[in-house]
Figure 1 (cartoon, rainbow, N blue to C red):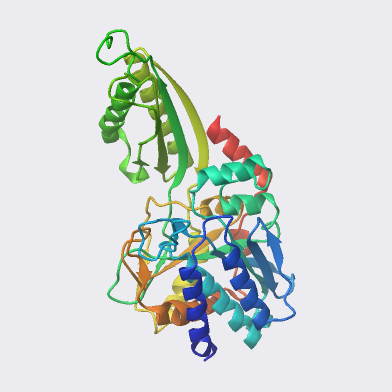
Figure 2: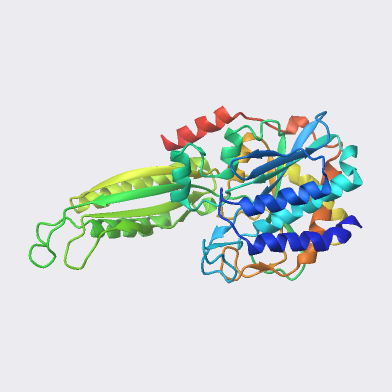
Amino acid sequence: MLFKKQYQDIAELSKKIFQNPELGYKEFKTKDTVKEFLLKVNRDIEIEEFSTTGLKTSLGSQTGLNIAFIAELDAVYAPSHKWSDPQTGAAHNCGHYTQVGIALALYSYLYQTKAYKNYDFKITFVFVPAEEYLDLSYRAKLVADKTISYYGGKPEAMKLGVFDDIDLGICVHAMGGEFPERTIEVNCDLAGFLYKKYTFKGKATHAGFDPFSAKNAYSMSTLFNVALGLSRQQLREDEMVRINPIVMESDMSTNVIPNQITVGSDVRTQSVGYMKEVVKRMDDAAIGSARALQGEVAIETQMGYLPFVQDRYLNEFVISAFEKNDEIAAIKNNNPISAAGDIGDLSYMFPCIQVGYSGFTGTIHGDDFIDIDPEYIFEVFPRFMAQVLEEMKGKIDREKLYKRSFADYEKLLAAILE
């Protein structure tokens, strides 16, 4: 009954966050909204703050495992979205505002009913900034100022030790597209990605008077794009490779042969090993394209996020809860996609799952994305996640879990970028 009773408050709070979208590491209004609600529910709450806007709080004593329930605070840069912030271009067409609402609904339920006292594990709520990989110039400044070390909120939190006491993680996420019935999704693996920057360098001359001694950097970039297009046939389909080259920087005019142009692209794959192989092919294509037209190319590589392979063992508890549930009609299972998230980085440290939920219309990250079934999202689904925790009570096998250190994580990133 409590989920039904608090539904209106949770829906209104989530709408407030939706109407005040903020980009990563700037979610100050969202942070205040979350803190205000938590303090209203539990005036004695202890809240740890991190990474400018991150929040962490726990229920239960540390006598067994510690399970993190994770929600993401940030919005996407989407100025053309119907409900974007006209000043910043931020919009909640990712659904993160509903994650926050779900997490707060669950916290309120667990605290007010004292259900958490019956668990043989501690439950820790972590509200993390900056999941979306964007606004990169701002984040580069934060790095330069030593405010952060990582562009992604979860890797930054990992570095700060926020997850050091956590044994496994649960995240939830909006599902893109409309569904005819209320649906959840499990075992949806995500791609990892690198970010590549290729700066082609040639020689500028007058385009009419002396094009003969020029070295056209734009033509080099065009040849590079053609090479990438022709190479796609040789890329493995099971890795769901995605490459999206764009012109990032140029200084061109119609009467001067361009001598420099920068092409940037993310590179998405389902595994780290194949990511390195695809990047090697891209680098070869760039070098070959530059040499073919007597130019040069400078190559930069920046780590994005690691692939996310959902923990199949932990998702068995979600499936078991679904089979006992009479409010959710359908379940999707084992449908990998090429979207990425920093949950992949966190899952390198310990087992993680991300449960999808329907209730939206429009295209996720598109101009028309919004929830259309708030009752499901803010009442039924949080109640279902409470049922998942009940399924886990007394049943989690420690032998099926793993734990790695942040130092191990750093070594992996170094090996990818070498």
